[in-house]
Structures are given as structure tokens and as C-alpha cells.
Length: 185
Image (cartoon, rainbow, N blue to C red; front, side, top):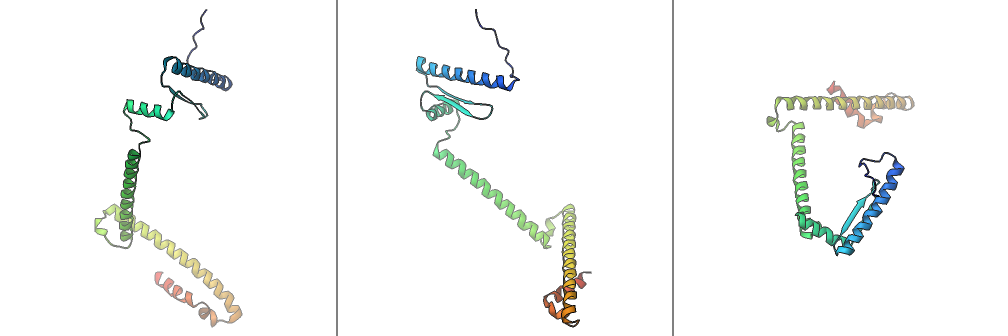
């Protein structure tokens, strides 16, 4: 009496699925071994479990067998040093070119922010640049106001201990900031 046919679909029960995987993996490895012995065939078998663990069988050197396979199907040799060197050189050439383009774009953007080379920009780009500059100026003003408030608070504290005439001279480096603040507003 023969075995019944098994419906080929994913086994839903994880325990049953693991048991079936182990049994069939062992059976497949045994068949690969038998094929290599009985038929003097060069066999290489690699199995990855669902968790990513690798199982392998090779009747000869597995690297040699994989190289034979790659040649047979027309894939480039992966261990060929000239191929790897050429691929690496191509990668770095592309990387270098991409970085050069990026540097060029950043330099042009910096020039645009400084008000130079504006003739290459369209109306939308100019409006966007204007918005960015306005936002930058607002941030600078806000920072200066906070700095001014901190200086004023520090100066108030120092006037109580030193005197009213010492306020500006106690903070000479902030005197210019205060004058510049008045120019901004």
C-alpha cells in the first residue's frame, strides 16, 4: 500500500511546521548525499530555515560548485578579484560624482542665499529663497531679543550692586548688540 498524497499548502500549526521542516530537511540532505555517492555527481545543497539558519551539504568544495553553477548560467564570478575591483571602482566613481554634484548644488545655494547668481533662479525659486531669508531674519531677531532681555536682566542685577552709571560699562560687548538691535526695528 502506498502513502497518501499530501496537499501542498503552508502548515498553519507552528509546532507541526517545525517538525515537518526538520524531517524533510534531513530527508533532502540524505537524498543529496545518496545522489552524490550513487551517481558520482557534484552536489551542493543550501537550505535556510524560516528563522534564517543555514544548512548545507556539498559533495565537493562548495565554492567550486557555486563557481561552476555561476559559469553555467552566465553570472559573473563573485570571487574574481578583477570583477570585484572593477565593481568597487565603479561604485566609488559614482559616489565621487554624486558628491561633486551635491557640493556644486550646495555652493550655488550658498551663493543664492548671499544674493549672488540670482539670474539662474525662476520666480518660484526666488519666492522660496525670500521666505527662507525672512524666516532666518526672524530667528536672528528673536535670538537677539532674548539676548537683549538676558543682558538687561544681568545689567539690572549689576546696577543694584555697582550703580546706575556702571550698567553699560559693565557689559561693553553688549553695547554694540543693543545699538544694532535698534537698527533692526
